[in-house]
Length: 348
Image (cartoon, rainbow, N blue to C red; front, top):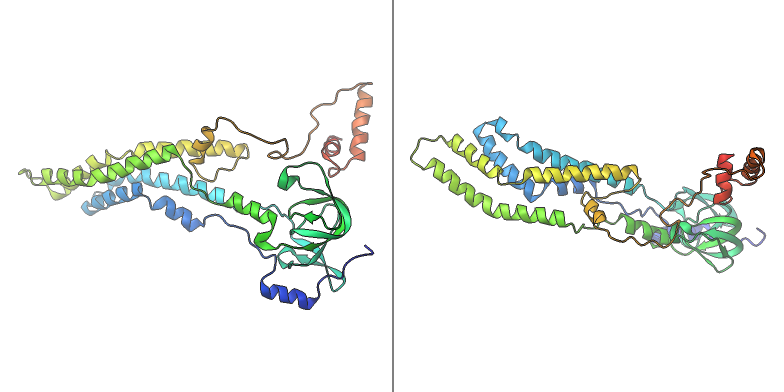
């Protein structure tokens, strides 16, 4: 481009890096593995069962601790599912490239995306993704913002127009000055919102927690009375036998089967949704989805791939003419030249 700007100097780049005005990796990560494990292990339900298991352990009757299998299975189901969701969610990224072309000291150079600084001049041509929010300083281009807004029509961008990070240049070449970096970028804000962990308001989970809280208030006083009745009843009952009988009675008061069944059913639902490429971050999100009565969408392309596929060819002037027409369309249209051209090219 004849009117290319000079760009930043090496000293100006170093100054901005020292200030922190750099497009550093600001990916918002979901909960850590430690947090997921802690949230699934450190629950009131598990605490009650561990206490009862500890009393059984004191008696040395290990075979009577089989009820802990339910606890282990429930914990494993929750941890495995949430870690799988975490891995998938952490990979979500709107800006997929790794390098960009910038102008520094009057010369074009390739830099990593995380090395772009505020006020850098980036050169964007056909097929390039905008690495950071910028303002066009020279040139013209048609930009596709469907990944961000769902709008499929190309938008003409000229000098002074804003470019949103994550959008694609479909035609033309522009030089643009970076105005936002890191978490200030539009794409980064969208990613952060998608990855944010939100507490699920589940009626099933709230009901189960309510049952466990009620049981926790009742189970230990009742257990103390049962133990006292057995051990001090005047009959010769061994201490170990009194403990085991009391624990057996208390375990029956805890709805372990209901909780395991709920986790298993939800896990199966997660697997089925995964086959349809639906990401479930938490098990109890399934209930939220099941309670949806009306789903409102703005237009096609927002939640779809934005691609077309040739389902069939209906000949008008004979099969030979139809095949030739498809091959001609495929030759004329590359996959990047619109959805219809790409579909014809794929079939041809």
